[in-house]
Amino acid sequence: MGRTMPFWAVGLALAACVVAGGTHARNPLWDNLPWDQRMGLSWYRALAEHDEPRAMYRLGRLYQTGEVVERDPARAAEWYRRAAKAGHARAQFRLGQLYQGGTLGAVDLAKAARWYDAAADQELPKATYNLGVLVERGIAGEADPARAAELYRKAAERGVAAGWMSLGLLHVRGAGVPQDRVTGLAMLLHAADTGVPGAAQAARRVAKTLSDEQRTAARREARTLGKDGV
Image (cartoon, rainbow, N blue to C red):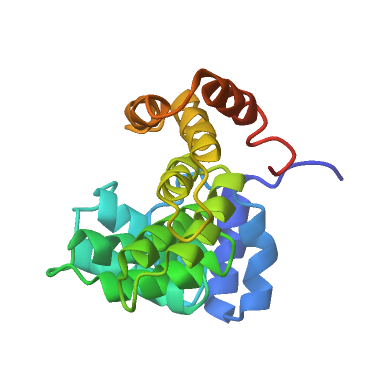
């Protein structure tokens, strides 16, 4: 009662679960294993071969980063794809990144958008933001700044500070949202305060077009962003 199961015992039990198969048998033991505990490549592969999405994702990360095994983007993509098809949100996001970056050959932004969309449906903020960028640019369809604005705000409110910068620029231009340079500047200032590259420079450019009163209003509004879901 109350004692932690020794790692060797967890390993034996985990091996038994792998041999027996069955997702429901594996999950309780898997959930008790800390992710920073080195199980070794063979454990991840054994679980992945038995359709455990988190193990598939972990194998993908190992092959992508070259940690423990030789770096192999193609094998990373293979494991990400299997995990992504099983509904693993972070695998969907990583697969989107590989397609967007051209790691698998030619850049394929349409496929990147599809996988970001799948991850965004599961509320993964970084995927939501990246999807917004592609939607704004008209990847895999016409440019849709209004939808991009919604995605940027959703990502920003969930901690992706770059979302405030991108949304702020839309407000400055009046693209997809009513033009409001004061609100746009407020978002740029908030992004700059959180260290988003380029936000401070953009804020200075916009600020030069506003009156002192408008700049003061923007600074006041900036202090409210990111609080209580705003």
